[in-house]
Amino acid sequence: MLTREELTAIAELAVERDLLVVTDEVYEHLVFEGEHLPLISLPGMRERTVSISSSGKTFSFTGWKVGWVTASAPLVTAVRTAKQYLTYVSAGPFQYAVAEALRLPGPYFTAFREDLRAKRDLLAAGLRDAGFAVYRPQGTYFITTDVAPLGEKDGFAFCRALPERRGVVAVPNAVFYDDPDAGRTQVRFAFCKKEQVLREAVDRLRGDAD
Image (tube, rainbow, N blue to C red):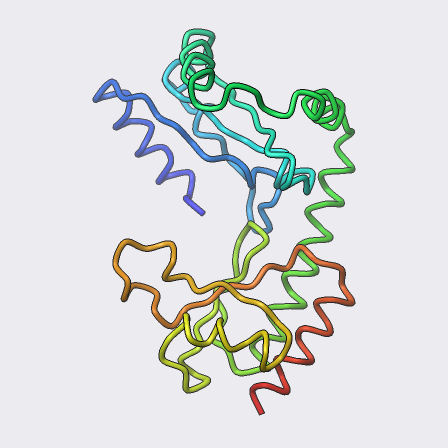
């Protein structure tokens, strides 16, 4: 997560070079340490920033594929024009449901964050106990780990074998890189699950590491 100083530096550069900035804010309510600072709120950024968010993360509606942008009127018009030619129709009935969800009171968002913070800590501790090197996230609902301490050299091979070995699924981080060797031993796990599911996964992974 970028610090206020880093975001300020980006904002100053954008103003200096007259840049438009598109920001991904889908985890705005899932920041576990510190607080989310929208780039659009910094001096000079209101008229040059398009902030994108999503019901998939904030309300756990990943299958609905409904999101929104926040920007000045001219930039919103430009986004709507582009969207018209990318996907002609997008989940019309769901949009009304998301509009209602956005009216939920503050305690919903606080409880949502605290629930996932506890699940992050549960899974992170279990993964460490199982022998993984764990990169504890400051936000999101994914934990990146390194399987090298387990004697593994290839995240792809590890993830392919893991379901049969322990009935647990992970994703190799290398799929997110252009360089096939980048993140070769890193894999990630999701913790947006029921607590009992996470506990069972941790028990299975501990057995796999023995």
